[in-house]
Each structure stands twice: as C-alpha cells, then as structure tokens.
Amino acid sequence: MGNTFNNSVTLASRFFLSAVFIISGLGKVAAWSMVASAMRGAGVPFVSIALPLTILLEVAGGLAILVGYRARHVELLLAGFLVVVTFVFHNFWAVSGAAAQEQFIQFIKNLAIVGGLLRILSDGAGPFSSDARKHASPGAPAYAR
Image (cartoon, rainbow, N blue to C red):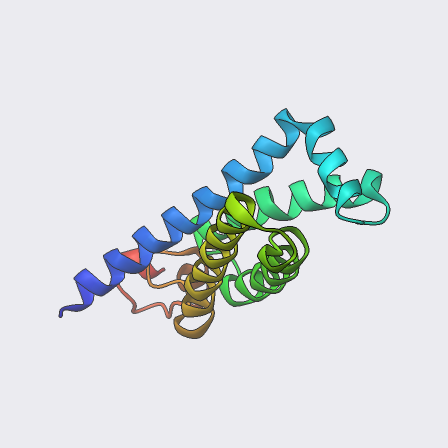
C-alpha cells in the first residue's frame, strides 16, 4: 500500500489512542471522589498525589499522542503505566462470575491499547506529527517541515 494510506492510518491510530487517554483523564476529574475511593481500595498509596499525577499523565500523554510530540518517549511511558494499572485494577483472577468476565475484558482491552502504543513506539508518529516537523530537513515536503 502507498505511503499516503500508511501515513493516514498512523494518524488515525494516534487520534483513537489519544482519545482513550484524554477521555479517561478528564473522566477521573469528573468522578474524583469515586476514582480516589477505587484507588484506595486497590491499595494505591498516596492517592492525593497519585490521582492528580494519573490525570496529568493521561491528559498530557493523550495530547502528546494526538499531535505526535516525543512519540517514542510518551508511548513508552504510557505503555508502562498502563501495564501496571492493568495488573492492579483488572485482576480477573482474584474475582469470580460476572465480575471476572468484566475484569478479563478490561484486562485484554488494556493489553490491546498497549499493543497500539508499542506500534507507535516502534514506527514513530509518522509524517503528520510534531516529531516529523521538528526533524524534517529544509528540502522536505511542506507537511514535514
């Protein structure tokens, strides 16, 4: 397939991945007390610090994915964060019945998101990104300057 198609798919994947983190972070702001309670229940220490840092990481990381800013660093950070969060909050092996099924779905979904992040980590953010503009040579096409 052509470069235009591949570049468009990379841009679309960044858009969809960024939406997951931005919406999740803003949702935590809207449900602050409920999220703080869930974090305490999961044994997260220093929730008064961990929750704002989580929101900052998700929203800022999501925006960085969206514009393709420092893609490889951001994707690595978010993938590591998401792996930890997945094992802490979606431990399907510790529950049974419908709760186990729901947690298993969340667990697998998060691993799929990690896969998308690792793909961008591997391939970069593409030519329609802040990273590409920063590293473009003077003779590069206009979209890459």
